[in-house]
Image 1 (cartoon, each protein chain N blue to C red):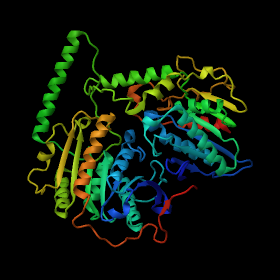
Image 2: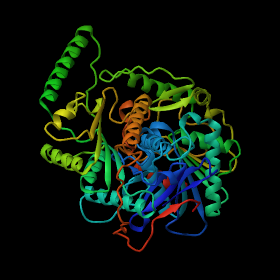
Image 3: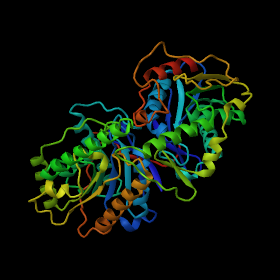
Image 4: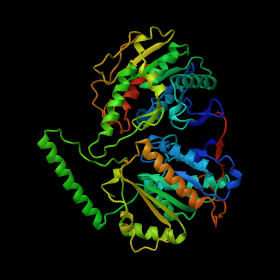
Amino acid sequence: MERICRFGLNQGLSGILSEPEKKGLHRERPAVVLLNAGILHKVGPFRMNVELARILADRGFPVLRFDLGGLGDSAVRTGRGSETDRSCSDIESAFEFLQSTGVASSFVLIGLCSGADLALKVAGEDERVCGAVLLDGVAWATPRFHLSRQLARLGRWRSFLERKVKGMPEAPGRKPVEILERHFPQAAECRANVQSMVSRGVRLLLIYSGGYFDRYNYANQWKGMLSGLSLRGQVESEYFRYADHSYSFSVDRRLLVQRVGDWTERYFKTLSNPVQLPVVKNRSEPDRQPTLLRAKV
Amino acid sequence: MKPFHFAAAESPIFGVYHAPVSWSGKARAVVLCHSLGMEYMRSHRAFRQLAELLARQGWHVLRFDYHGTGDSASVSTGISLDTLKEDIALASRELSSISGVRRPALIGLRLGATLATLAVSEGLESDCLLLWDPVLKGDQYLREMEGMQEARLRHPHFPRKIKPSGEALELLGYEYSRAFLDELQGIDLYAVKSLPGQRSHLLDFEQRSVIRRPGFMVEEPVRPAQSDEAGVYGRWNDLNSAYNILQAGMAIQEISRLVI
């Protein structure tokens, strides 16, 4: 079952809450919050967020997909601070909406590209977050990354020469597709953030695609990136080598949705120690309650 | 801007209603009809901008997602020409009941324009029909989509082999039933001989070399004056543009001028 919901300043943020059929049985479960990928609306690239929301709701989790201010069907925000700060504030509003309406008191964030960057930042700062799935999120080079890249360049030269000899047309450039310009924190800062989250009990699923080759180019790169940290088995990774950055083939999306669904179900179906936090009022709009729109305008 | 569900509760359609910001005289209403697949994804933002501009000009505006697309219920393999046309009719009735306008105008982009034309030709009442880069011949449209799909599969750095699964076929990231693609194949707007009782505009920003204009259109297509604004042209059959968000500021201005 899906309901439209509005929350945040002047009810300007808009989303859709997918709820399990037997929601009363799953009160202790975290809600999953799906974030925008770049400037695409909440449906996500190739309807990925809708597929994820419906699969996860079928598996018993409440799922909110919503548009950050100014994107999709949410109002343009007016306010101070950086774009990132305002986006984080919007995510906080989503948490407060889900808490105040009794849907959940802890959250799993899922984001692709710039959505992954936001998910990582919020997960590091907000103790209500118990898990995050980062799709083509932050990554930094390891020695093997550089080696793999050099080998790939050799391969491209070979391909180029073969095409020349055979008189074949030149291959198009191999440029990564990015939806927004991204600013990554330093590796040391990310490592400290991950360690802090793991110490707090947060679980992370780091998923990388082949389309992200300029930052991540072999399956176990994440182990090199996070070497020396005490991860306690709380960090997992998956490398979809043949998928592009936006999972434009349905076969890739099916694998992705399956992996995310399995991970979420394995670790959050029954929280051994569910987070119990007091209901926090929406700071930006203390006197108005969020609304669930069940009927027509 | 009010998002809401309409149509049957067990299979709702997601819509967003934009109330008129200004009010002058007779109420006016318009339904915006999306295209499908990649074209939907690219143009969602442009549709919001168009809806906001029209609302500022005093229109009641409804944009919506067909069943099996966007935030509406169902899956893309359940789409048929009949479900799409029926969804346009449902949206038109919904907006009519909200606004009190008996025959809302229809603005459609690409396949959305084609579907709106077919819906009107089959009896849906509308005061004004505006077709933005419409798909005029289904067979040509499918050839172009399949060509882009083939190019995508043969990408030199990310080649893929996708086996068709059962009755569903994938076109640029979205799966459709074979039956629906057969229906698309048969679309021919030139065969639509009359559209009773409304103004019709056709905006073909790309001036494609193929036949551009069916005979029933009553006004000349209008182009923005020698614009080279990036993104005015959808380049709908260009794989390199297929992943770009449509920046259609000028097209939107032109459309809002025409429907007044």
